[in-house]
Figure 1 (tube, helix red, strand yellow):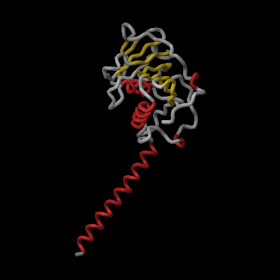
Figure 2 (cartoon, helix red, strand yellow):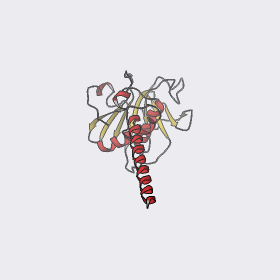
Figure 3 (spheres, helix red, strand yellow):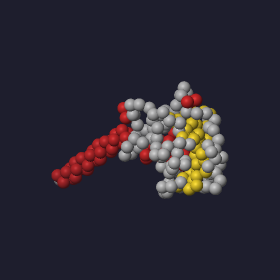
Figure 4 (cartoon, one colour):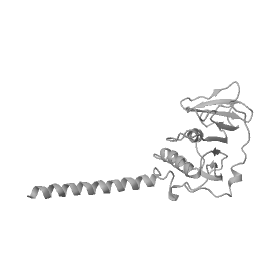
Length: 210
């Protein structure tokens, strides 16, 4: 008669260990931002970095953009803190994304692409970005570095692993995520145009808590 109680005790012990392990895993994921899409206050860098990277997203509501940004940041911040965006609501269906601590040009371009094709969402959104390139940025050469550029997806309805870039001098490139070099285009996919507002214009506006 002792065996049934022994088996029950073992089952209870295993169940308890699984619960504790699950809680510990959840705690670790919350700390590294994987569940919440961003770092806690204590993980933020000490100083902000001046930059002009700006993304405009049109067509999604506040609930949708929160989920999409959390998903993107949760993935890219798993191993190390790489992207800390600030989202500003301009209208119910228009949002601006800036980067108070800066972000690599590659991740910046990847986010523009992802916002056009968010995982698990078949709706059509539009996102484009502006930045000033540097020679150390991925894909950049002496000819394309140091230029204000417009970054965009030409057809948000057709998923692709590249985005387009047009400089303020109306020189067009295609940036492939699997390619080290940019493809120079005979004509830009879209002409360069100034953003409707700048990062500085958003300085005094409240950002959305992700």
